[in-house]
Amino acid sequence: MILYNFSEISSTNDYAKELLSDEDIICVTAQNQINGRGRNNNVWYGDFGNNLYISFGIKHQNSCTLEFLANLQSIGAIAVKQSLEQISNISYRLKYPNDVYAYDGSKYRKISGVLVEHGFLGSECNYSIIGIGVNINEINFPKEIKETAVSLKQLGISVKIDELQSLVINHFSLLLSLEDSEVYNLWVKELNIIGKEITLVKGLHYYPNDMNIYTAYELLNDGRLVLSNQENSKIIIDNGDTIRYNFD
Ligand code: BTN
Image (cartoon, rainbow, N blue to C red):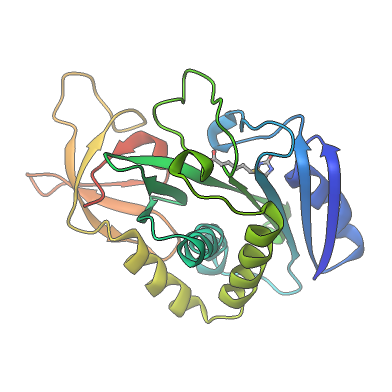
């Protein structure tokens, strides 16, 4: 895997896309992103030199199954969780589909997010970019996310960005070498969402003043989540920002 490191670029995801044309698998990191992007067109916030901004670019030689593509999003989050667990005793949880939350002593707050983007040639996926942000030394989050985001520094953990970066790259590479079913089983175990009460807060199936309470029924191997309600009717979601649930 070739590693590219930049001081300041628009977004490591965008550069990974550009640089991938010459290689089969690459990793791009930056000290700062001017246009860091999150899921659902959100901005990914972070000051210069404070956090890990890393993207893996993978070119696909053969046609990929939906299961493999779904696994790429979980691999990013599991790699981060395993790396964080290696350097601290804090309790971490995955939130569906691929956020990592850390316990601050009273509640879980988001410490990492993963943005996966695929490129298609016709109906074939020919490359994937897995972009990961981990809050390390950030202390001034914008007020909209001040209560819900957290960094390692705020949790009293001090770690060099390079050290966490190496751990994430190692865990990511190991996870990438596993069979699809092994990654899926690990994701189901790490998410630990099945049977939990889920509240819809927005999205296609959300109706104001309606009963928006469901139970997580099944994680499909293409990454979508099946929810069932008291009447046993089922809906399928794929956007984690549309649901809330307690981790424990
Ligand atoms: C999310 O919304 O939770 C996903 C956030 C992903 C942020 C990372 S930082 C590195 C890479 N480059 C980007 O522009 N986004 C991802």
